[in-house]
Amino acid sequence: MSSKLGKPSQKSGGCYCSKGGDKLHIVARDFGMRCLISRCPHTLGNVVYMDTPLQSSVNTHTHSPLPYPQMCPPLCSVTPSQKYSQRGGRGEVVSTFGAVQGTRWAGRKGQTNGVQLELLEGSEDSLINNYKYMFQRLRDVRNVLTEKIEELGEELRTNFNIEEFSPVSLPAQDSVIVLGQVCCDSNGKLNSQSVLLEAGPEQGGRQVPVDLSELRDYSLFPGQVVVMEGMNTSGKKFVASKLFEGVPLPFYSTPIKQEMDMDIPDEQFLVMVACGPYTPSDGLTFDPLVDLINVIARDRPDVCILLGPFVDSKHEQIEKSLVTETFDAIFSRCVGSIVEGTKGVGCRLVFVPSQRDVHHHFIYPQPPFILPDLSKDDAKRMTLVPDPCTLLIDGVTFGLTSTDILFHMGAEEISCASGSDRFSRILKHMLTQRNYYPLYPPVEEVNMDYEKFQGYGQMPLSPDVLIVPSELRFFIKDVIGCVCVNPGRLTKGQVGGTYGRLLIQRSAPSIDGKRVSPCVAGQVVKI
Figure 1 (cartoon, helix red, strand yellow):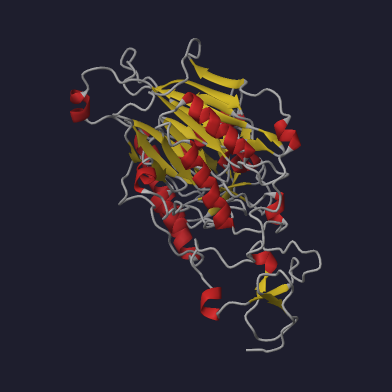
Figure 2: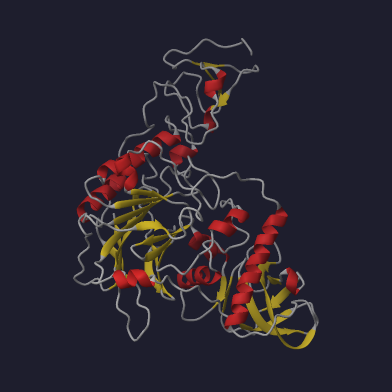
């Protein structure tokens, strides 16, 4: 260990600085540390030596706060955002769905029965623990993609009574039907002239360019598994004349035993949905979160689904390492405020992580948060779930993901379709491709583990309600029987954003034997 240390700075909490040596060093920007004394050497990027034994200074546990100067205050900035406090349109309804006239937006007021809430596939088949990542092999990725092509291909073959698929690169003078995955012929953005169809090993495993000029309507994106009909006279270009539509999974059906136990129609219950960030971009005060807690206390929803980011990696002060508290500590205080503020409401809380949560694992699928310090009473009304997941709430299925798949797919999709909007097309792709992130390759900000994605990123069924928060415009709409909701983000830069609320009734009556959505009504509201 080097003994070449400078003198400890006054009021520095036992920190030493030096320009070299073989002593353990910590770079301030790695942990968001900064001393508030103007002349102190603990400035961004300088090497900081902690006056702490080596074995206690280094801790690789994800949720253990790292040592920091005790003199630092909780947050770098506690000045309320002026733009947020001066926002207009508070409580304004900006999007509606269903029969909203005369609707009473309130929960059951904490009835003793409450709602039953659980992961659809149970804890054994769901991602509930952390896992090791960053060592997947290319062959494993290839195997996952191949299985996806084969599974979806078999479903399409059965649904459309197709006898067999032809190899994509085999020359044929007659019309043939082929199966493959859409990809781009370069690293650029997909366009109508750069579409390739890549077949699985059973169909030859080759790539062939696709001519889309004869298709009237189409919507394609990289990674999409498709079945096409057309001609490939030379073996070098496939001229598509027909594109078969994907087939979604069936919806959840209540077990017969539960149906027999239902003597009276189920009451409606209220679900509130909000997505981070929960702070304005010009400060780390949680004023928007406080306003949301006040709304929860007023409306008393039965379930409140909160999606990350809670400690946003894209926040200006976090990007510039201006915070003086560990990220875990900020998150713990945020969660503590939610738990305490909703204690008398009686609602169930669901926390969904985000890859933008700077204190959590940067991987997709993403394991749930770990909150070991909760009391037993608080733990009973909190559910920590992974991203993505499928929840079962009183017999109604909710698909949840905090990853902005709408924005990612919207940037890559190409279409020539009349009478449909982009959001509906993308959401339909998610339901017919049967997973929460069908785009391949993923965007750079999504760190995908494909082996885990195969097990935990697939849709086990078509959800009754699909929650897909995005930077794009908020909406609530029905897409092939699934009510899809983008509640927006609670803050948009320095101003307030939106949240969503849904009125749900499980035993909705059927009309002429047709399924009726359990989502009776929905709204997107300004905070």
